[in-house]
Image 1: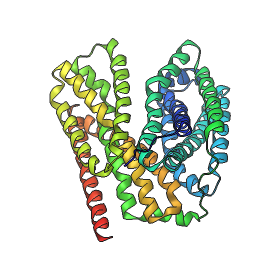
Image 2 (image 1 turned 180 degrees about the horizontal axis):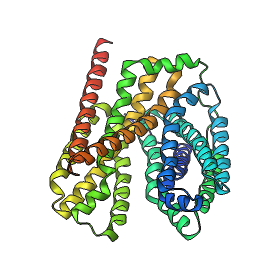
Image 3 (image 1 turned 45 degrees about the horizontal axis):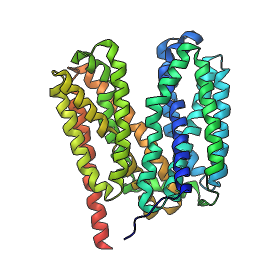
Image 4 (image 1 turned 180 degrees about the vertical axis):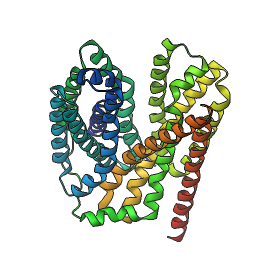
Length: 396
């Protein structure tokens, strides 16, 4: 059987969508690196500035499925270009923002645009790329977020330190312009669109199989973030010099690039079947961290493995949700594409909260045990989904 080869047009489209997620990721995550500058400039506390992060995440999670459902019949190419244009305008307004209220409103609107654009990028990558190469395409698109954390956020943070936080938003505005031009040149015009009511769209969310698939990435991300949220205190406990922590965090992000590559490999064949064991390995790595932090080098190696395992689930669960929607509600594939980003935000919030609860109730390293238990729960849910899939195939 001849292997499918991606054309130049396919690769241009993949790189365009990856550039788009890089720009969106930089805009979303860079706020963490410039919170101190914002709080100082706007004369607010760091805690109040931190609400810019939580408000973005909450707006993203709530608004994305709603907007995706309401706009499912929009022509995808024109809608994407319109949204990128809105992204550029919103970031440009952040450049001249002079108040907390104005910045909060702009960030919440940006969250809506970001959520919908990410979902559309995933949908287009899944639809416009040959089926056998969808895993590769989606892993590249997710890779844009990794590059945003490894490259975009540090650059944005340095710009804020050299100039001010307004200059950082000028950077994201200019990146938005680059993404618009690339999208204008490379997005195909013949993409699917479905006319269906929001009631039909949201009926997808009532299906037990969709809900089960939604909580697989939620638990997977929750397992990682129960530990990652407190990685700096863990590194301090390990005896890491203060000057080396930023370098270790950079290395953590760099390793996750390879996690994206492996995610595409896992998604290429029997993805959910493979994920059952990925989560078990993730659980083992997190449990092992409990015992390895007394040995600095071994502990660092363990943290590197934690980074490698962190996002192996992304491509597989993204495609799984879209494929399940194709079976149970074909007109809601756009909504299904939005569920993975929402699930990741739910998992991050859940994992961070769970880790915080455990951290404040007992020894710090207990967060690794809790992370391992959550990973086992993700594995059990994946085992159940896989078994139901196999049963359905046998019945058919």
